[in-house]
Image (cartoon, rainbow, N blue to C red; front, side, top):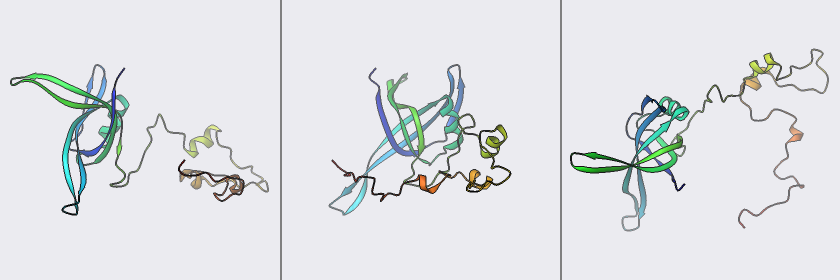
Length: 181
């Protein structure tokens, strides 16, 4: 298979439209990507041509895109580039289309808050305690055991545990490696 895989950075130029088909849910939107270059003569950046492309998102991606993306949002789209062709009164027409594998916000232009889908999400601390996946501290408060509070677990910390487990970056046991070879 010779798919042409592309990643396009640009802006959503119309409101995403979600439809249910016999093949599953699909969300479509159009995006524009305008290249910029530095013009030495004018000593400033100038816009080059704009690449216009339709984007189609299927199934789980469809629902997440329709719930998350709006007209004007800066996005990054990664997928397979195809050509959509059709017949019109003026003859055969075509335009580029990306079948998206992934769509996300362009974080060079703003911030985002990510929320996992319920099916992909790990159980929260309260569920983990209730199901026994997370052990509560012993009722006698055994010495030497430092258990995180419920609030710490719910705050989404990356690591909870003994600080000695983590190695500092300047640890003498770690040999330095060159950044470029």
